[in-house]
Image: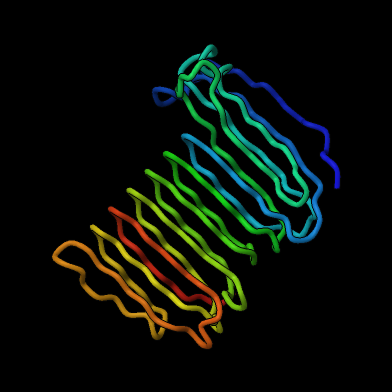
Length: 229
């Protein structure tokens, strides 16, 4: 496997918009990968969107944003490859966490994901590998197809709603808990129950229960959906 050339286009613009988003810079890098790739993302502020595609590559398209050019220069995007693992990380020079990065990633369908986002939503679809997502402040939306075998889906939000969509025919053991929030499920065999006055949970076994689905949020609603692929 090899690291493809970086294609970075700096597009600084003093454009109108919300406060904190007046300076922007685009970033693009592609990494050629093999089967069984694991994509690890660490972001501080900004949404992370991941979609599966048929190419043997991880494509990283991102937009850095800040309130001015100086703050923008302090934001760094690092992409590196160690064997079958691709690491994508946002860092800030000088210890100041001003501004953020919005990521749009395209990954092979068999990739596994490990995503940590401090403040921002995570939206992913199409992958058939393991999924491990954590946000401190932001919603998680995941469509992961059929969950079976030794596959693991682990979604955790501190403050934010979590919506997981799976395909019919999944074989998984399901557990979901919201400390403050509702739980809704249209998956047969997984029913919600009230926890105290403000929380909710649900659990159940789908098919043989071979895979694992674990969803938690401290403050926010959880929805488990079943849709055909």
